[in-house]
Image (cartoon, helix red, strand yellow):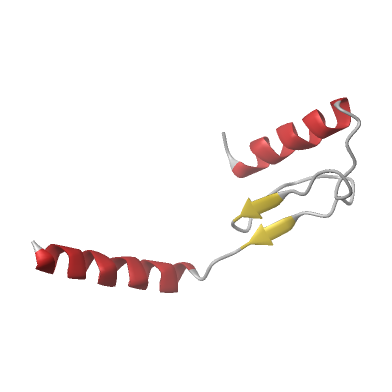
Length: 68
């Protein structure tokens, strides 16, 4: 399931349980396409610098391979 599908499911579950966002439940997403919704609901999105993440991952992998 994509990020937006998970977000929609969380919003629906919160509504079904009479939970209020963000008073009772906080939603935090990863990436730019967190949730496409019509109602303004406060959602926190963590959007990493993908080029930097890739650079660090490649560097770490290189170090791990060098240790074998």
